[in-house]
Amino acid sequence: MTLARPVTVSTLASMKLASEKITMLTAYDYSFGHLLDQSGVDVILVGDTLGMVMQGHTTTVPVTVKDCVYHCRCVSRGVERAMLAADLPFGAYQASIEQAWTNSVRLMQDGRAHMVKLEGGELMAETIDHITSRGIPVCGHIGLTPQSVHQLGGFKVQGRDQAVAKRLKRDARAQQEAGASLIVLEAVPAVLAKEISQSLDIPTIGIGAGVHCDGQVLVLQDMLGLYPRKSPKFSRDFMQGNDSISHAIEDYVACVKDASFPAVEHSFE
Ligand code: KIV
Image (cartoon, rainbow, N blue to C red; front, side, top):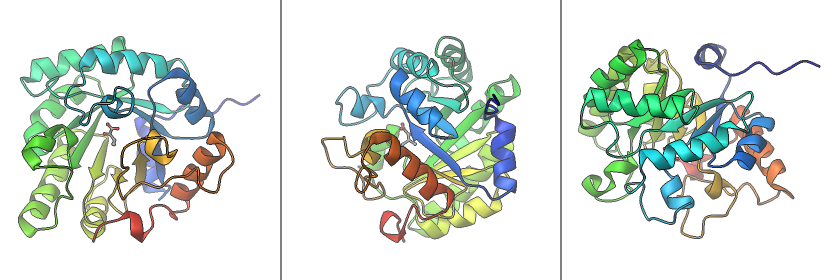
């Protein structure tokens, strides 16, 4: 019996070099962690969207480190092959570099994550440098950063104007230089996401950022049509046309790999 080799940061870097799309989905419990892992998802993210899809909040702001650690530990028991990333939630890393380090260690040791994700651009570069240079891989997250929803004035597309587009390009470069292994680009025009993806050595993972990112991520409940509130325009219900959850997840993996998802209707111009 051959065991599938675990996905590491080196695997992700090689996938970008080989132009192989990276698949990412969120999960919050053991059963889905196992199913996603068996379906060939490359990176499983215990996102702070758990606050919305598991806890019923309207934003991710109320989520705590304890919540992320608990859900990550549950998911970790089902994961053998995928890389397991976990969100640092709102308020868990902005106060100081020491706070970011301490909470990253909690996610790695108690949550059994392989990588932490944090929101913010150039401002977070020093924090990313500190965490990565001490042995914890980091995934950045720029564009629409949901933890800042109240500051942004809603869940809005970012980077449609020149000034913000320029800042996002600077943010992406600063995160790469600080040592990030991946960057999530959320709700940015496809043309901008393409330019950022082509300019970086590290892979970009898009959500509402067009087909030219190096990989894609969706929230599990959105892509299974399970979220009772409105799902974002950039998501697609993969249960439509599939007769089981596992087929829907395999379909998502296939559509990301062959770049048929996202289509133009899931992207912003
Ligand atoms: O929290 C989350 O699930 C995320 C993804 C939407 C990228 O950050």
